[in-house]
View 1 (cartoon, rainbow, N blue to C red):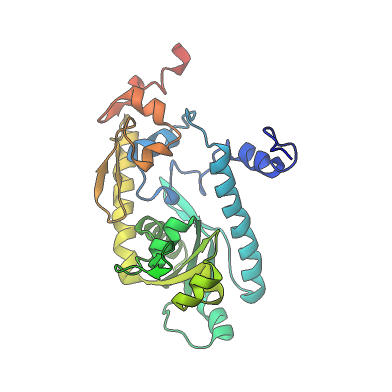
View 2 (cartoon, rainbow, N blue to C red):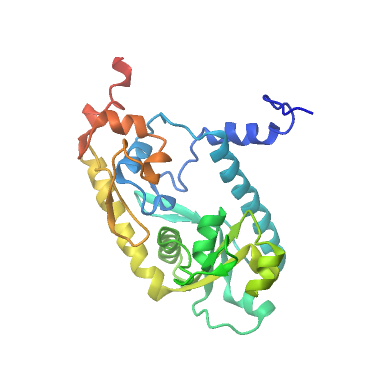
Length: 299
C-alpha cells in the first residue's frame, strides 16, 4: 500500500470547487461593498471594490471549506422550502454602495403553523447559517472539546461580525419592503465534526446539538451592531470615492478597532487575497493613483 502523492480521483470535487473560488462573486446589487465584509479590513474592502487582482488567491483547502459551506447552505434552503412554503431565499437588499442577500426570510406565520406560538415579534425572521470548524463552534457553545466539558466562560454565541452582517441584511430588507418587520434574527451554526458519543453523554449533549446550534438574536442586540457597521462602510466608501484606499484597520469580535500589518501574523492578513499588494502600497491611506493596483499596466 502506498499513498498517492498526486491523487487522480479523490481530488476531483475539490478541483472543481477551487476553480470556482478563483472568481469573486459579484455583490448582490452590483455595489462596491458587500454586507459579508462586516468587520473586515477597510483596505481589503477597497481592493475588492476596485476589482484588484488577488495576489494570494484562495488555495485548495480554503476552497474546500467554503465549497462545503455552499453545498450545505443550498441543501438546507431546499429543506427549509419544504417545511416553510412561503420562505424566500437569497433576498437581496442594499443601497448605492453596499448590498447583500440573506440565507432565508421566513414569515412568522409559517413558523408558528409548524412550531406553535413564538415570541419572535415582527412579521418575519431573518435566518443566517454559518458553517465552521470545531474551534469556532466550540467557542460559540462554550465547550472544551478536548476535555469533554463546558468552559468556565460559557457560550459566546455567534460572532459579532456575523450578527452585524445579518443585521445589515435585515435593515436593508425592511427599507426596501415596508411590509416586512424583523425583530428576531435566527443564527444557525454547523460544524463539520460532531462531538463524540462518549463526551456527548458525559456533557448531557444529545441529538443534533452534537454538531449544530441555533441562536435567537433580538433587535436590541443586532440593531446597533448593524447601524455602526453601516456607518463604517459609509466611511470606507467615501475614502474610495475621494480617491484613497482606506487604512489597514478592521474590527475584532468585541467591535474594537484593530490595526493590521501584512507582515504580521493577524488572521485577517493570513487569509487576505491582497496581502502582497497591501504590503507594497504601505501603511495609512493610499492615493489610489499611486497604488500598485493602478500601476500594473506600467510594468
